[in-house]
Length: 455
Image 1: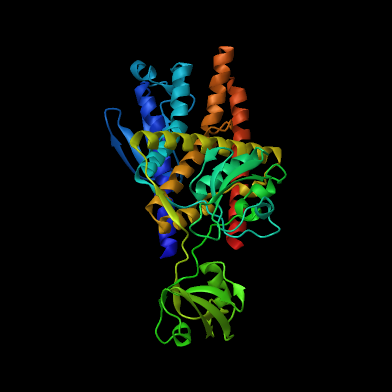
Image 2: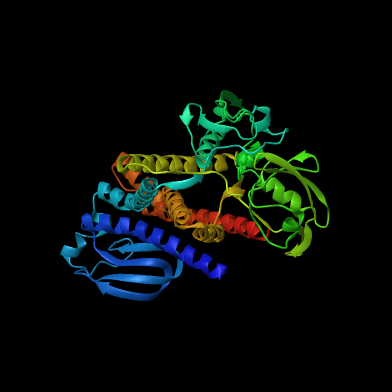
């Protein structure tokens, strides 16, 4: 069932993004008066088609779902010797260079506009995210050495306000890629809960980090993780080890075997690792403290022996939902799309320069995996994923590779500068080189996908 959902989520995401991209080309081509012969979602053999409109444009679905195309009347690709003079005026290569630029650029632009629309809708609705509160960092980590401690709330990075974990991650990633250090504005709760939080300014050294350390899950490598709720029991199953030990719903676990319990996640980890071992608990019950002994019973999960005491815990981090006015949502959606686009270009540039590993290049298998994961998480996560993939699709198509939109835009830019189109011979050679380069990139992406899948 999960595999079916993953496939369906992938097909819906990629199919909608390809359709939007090709609709961009189609609509601007129609606006420029170019005759459209076929609009295809998918590549290869046509499995379904229908002709519509005064031009009898063929609307088709093709067998390979990884792409799509708009086929225009083009003398470079078709025999136009028997075409009427009226239709010849609508042939693509006879259009002005600025019209050709507009038609080619419309596909990537459509992807960026879709991302802006999706992000605007999400910001308007409100996106629930974990607050930027830190779980205890390792004493050897960059975060700990910078002065961060458990429970610290980060409110700004280099003067830019942050409220959520995603915002914190985004700011630190951009600074890390720029080899810039970060100054964190932090609020720290004192032991006396009634006291006003202490405000701190902490310097986080990011400029010394290697590019490899800034790749996947880089916050964990810095020592950052999301703070979790205290170990307060939400429910106790009757007859289970916890119930027999005298634990009650609402109890907060303070210590295990004389060691302070950080939060519910640490409590769960200790219990899982202590099957058939008696543990001494110090429990806060109301205004008093109670000492109890509990022995987790052994259970086998996926071939691994773990301990269980049959209680319910709240492990989800503190969440914050930020809703925006329509204007603010549009501004934030546009800024998010711009920043994500620039970050993608920057990452590609660092790959070419050898500063970032090519292992970060992903293909359809990884995209399908994330499509399935986000669809199971919820509609907001899935739409955010589609918006980011739409940006990636727009950026990739703008790369100056001859078979992509960016390659054609390069040709037309040269035509604007020189006053004449590139020669057919140059175009053929560049096209072949572009196919080889694109196939090489796809091979690397597929290889990375398979390695991730196996690991």
